[in-house]
Image (cartoon, rainbow, N blue to C red; front, side):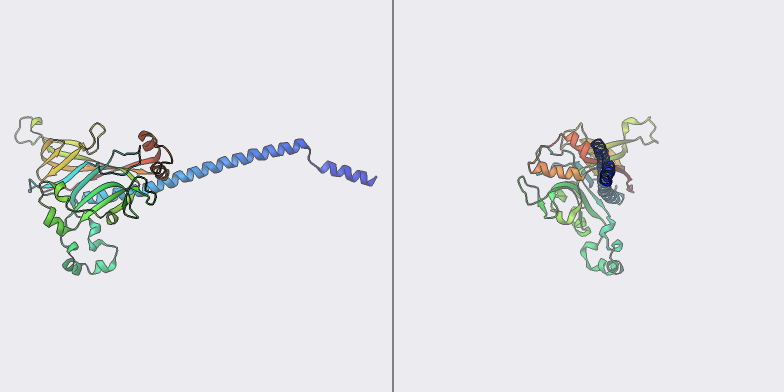
Length: 331
């Protein structure tokens, strides 16, 4: 009798099949909800990390370009000398099939880069011995340097250009900043009527000139003020100034046709001459590739997947940033 009552009590403690199924269903629902929340959290974390990384690259590029433009050097009295040259660049070679990025600007100008000067170096030794360095090292003699910016698709770690079928290197879209020391700038570049040709004698050392990676687009919009004799009111005492925006990249222009040349007393933009011109400000815009975009480019380069349309590529895998900067005016 006691054995029977014990068995009855044990049966009453056990779960029925319906209760087990119900518990399993509730557990499954909870697991699914937790997994979805976890996936959403991971996706949000990845998105925030990508935005942080791209913002850091953008901030470095924009700050450096803006700083150089803020120290640009132009002498309006040297009327026939060229002080700035900008164009649509066609030198991004080795790009993956389907991702031939057509948007890239190249710019050359004269400036006083503060990071080239030992007096503002992070090194205390250089800062303390700046006067002796000025007298002994050619690269510290003088103030003005020729500066250029250019985008390239290459492996900046191994210092190798991108080549189709090459699996040893890992090329990236990279921004390069080339600075020519003041002595060579003074002796071999200043006073040029064609800045591009004079600058071409210097072969940039890409491993030393690398600035930051994953920049797929660089553009400048130059706000130019010049004298427009056709817009005056007939009063000779009033100078008829006009301000126009000159984008180096333009969706309506043919590739390789956008060129801007700034001389001491005039500017030339696509054959349009502007007398007594000066660049009063510039808007720098860059497009940065996300980590997902970097992985996609490498997969496309190795033939592991097809390239998406460029519109989809830019909208999904890139972030755009811009910054305006006022330029010092020549005397």
